[in-house]
Length: 132
Image (tube, rainbow, N blue to C red; front, top):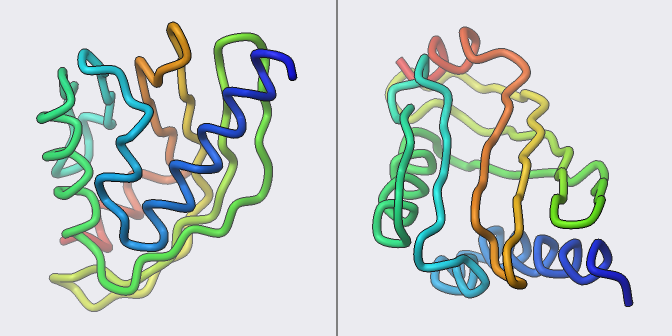
């Protein structure tokens, strides 16, 4: 199995864990010094460094929504990067507004661990409105 295939398998496993509510399983293959880069225009935006901060970030993201779901469209992998293309849907917790937005997440690997995660939302202004 190639490095790209192995890394894709890790991303698929992480996504499945998160979607099933296994928060710790989601982070099983993250490096201790992982970084998550969320868009600064969103309420939970910023750069989160380290596993503890990555967990705090993920809680902040998912606490903004109710009934959040992710429909995976495809994975694109090359060497030490995997791009997850998905549709994020749910309801804004504060506003009650339903939403559905395309998202691409770049997972960067180092030594078989997720070293960096950076989501790219199709429309952050729309998400800000939904989040409230």
